[in-house]
Image (cartoon, rainbow, N blue to C red; front, side, top):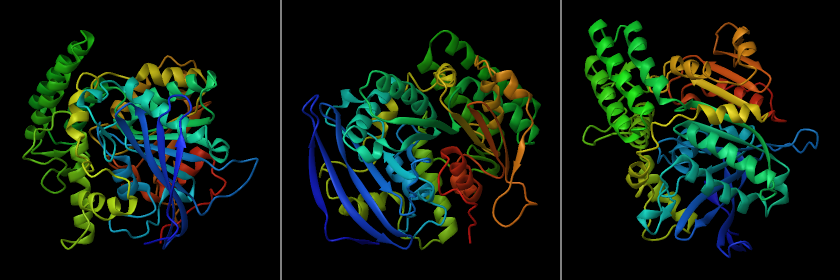
Length: 467
């Protein structure tokens, strides 16, 4: 990867709050063609700095009747870095070894990665008390960032924005969607919201914890006695949530995970067909109460090691704190990628187990396109749990949606191998992705790319074959 010589800095001024926005433009040449890039910081609140990175697709098709979309990718955790995980490990133009990714979503849309909430990835706070404590606070910060990017860019305003989320990022996505709608209605934000897509998203923790025991029992990973104990702990969580004891519910959630890990002989919560020992998701030496961000890190480290062999040179932290940091040139000396992750996690303990079903209902009622996509063998956000919370929606189109059949999905050069199913009614869409765990774009890249083209109605939406 070569960086063009003409790297320059532009300083924009937020006229509302007189907060500077540092924006860097670069032109990067890689094996997948020329990619225009921008990145920078937005001070979303005094002493709270959010980092963003925008890739503009070299395959952009200019069609006034079908505008080129922009995807905002929100990682889970809370505290998982979209600039790191989503970008280099899942859907960005380059992988962790800085090699071109054949299945990059950049083929269908421009990609905007943001390290949110503040304290995540390269984002940082100068005062620990500035860490967000709720999904709504995170949405407020993100909305402020979008105002800075879109209000100052006529070209961006022409592109519909699609908010894609993974894991805990789903809770951020639906709260952001509502915040964005309010800002648009108030004429404070100049953009068109194309839709919200929830990938293996932590929308209703209660429904997920009740799905774990029965699913593992059906898969022969636990016995009847363990199922009873699992359901008992899930019932305890339900009671704690009903009484508003959210931090205690987070503690019990952790107890339930540890119990099922032991009873199942360490099942992999990101793929229930695998063992912890074969594809570990957590670092054994840490306490992982609610800390999905650390799960991300270790999962991908092991996954790339197994693919590339023991000699893989670029693990993600080394990449982000080494070559990428050097390329970006604007990361403060005292900021380390991921250095404030635990601050983010700890600050959101009380919000971790709160459901966001009502927010999904509101988006649907307002006419926003909502897409749900889920990996077949995910456990942490199991499809069984997703279907349970979908059944709780009060949206007036739900019964019609539930009564419909599904359409099979194929990808590549075969129409005999089923890759998934899809069904939709009005503005609700549901994709069941077969053979995928928690990280759908990694496990099933071909059908994922095809799905993204359909969701965004990308002008470049031909069937894509991975070679």
